[in-house]
Amino acid sequence: MELPAIPGRDAVGVVDEVGEGVQDTVVGDRVFGLGGVTGATAELALLSARAQAPATWSDEESAGAGLASVTALGGLKVLGPLPGRTLLIEGAAGGVGSAAAEIALAHGATVIGTAGEHDHAFLAELGAIPTTYGSGLARRVAALAPQGVDCAFDTAASGSLDDLVAITGAPTRVSTIADHANARRLGTHLVNAVNDPALLDAAAELGRQGRYTPRIERTYPLERIAEAHARAERGRTRGKIVIRI
Image (cartoon, rainbow, N blue to C red; front, top):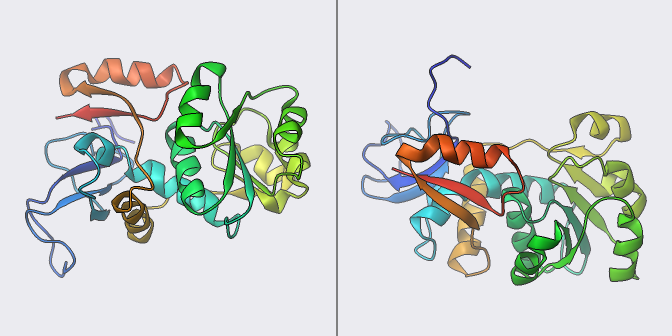
C-alpha cells in the first residue's frame, strides 16, 4: 500500500454517478458495499460491490454492514446448511462475529458465542448463548450443548482452532477468517472476504425482513478518525466502529 492512503473498505452513501453498462443502480440510490482495501473513508468513494441499503438500517448500520456481512456469510457458507444445527462462534461480539451470530440464527441455527463476560448480555440480546473463551472451552460448551456442536466459526484467532476441531469432531466442520497458519496445519476451511454483490444482497434482504441488523459500537466524526483507529486497535470492539463524513 502506498502512502498517503485513504483508509476504509466499506461505506454507505447516495450514488452520484454510475459507470458505463451499470443497469442495477441509478443516481440517487442509497447503497452500501465495498471498495478496495482502502479508499472508503471519503466524501466520494468508488464501490466495486454494492447493494441497495435497506430502509430498516440507519446510515451507520449500513456503513458497517459491508465487510462484516460478506465475511460472516462466507465463513458460514462453507459449513453447509444451518437449520437445526448448533454452531459455535469464537469472538461472537466483534463485527464479523456478531453478524455471523445473527445471520446464523436467522437461518435456523442454535448459536453458542464466546466473548468476555462484559459482552454476554450483548450476545444474549442477539439471541446467542454466551460463554467465555479460553481454557476449558470444550467443557463449558458440552454443558451448554449436551447433544454436541455441529460446526464452528473462528473470527478471533484466539488460538482455539485445535479445540474447535475436537469439539466439532472434524476439521471440515470448522471455518476461520483469522488463524491462517493453524487452518493450513489442521485442514479447516480458511475464508477471506470477497467483494461479492450476491452476499451483500443476501445480507440486505435479511435486513429488510428485520432478521439482521449490523451492530455499531460507536460513531466518530471524520476529524476524530485517529481516535477511532486507536480504539479499534485496542481490540474487544462490540460490533463495528463507523466514521461519519
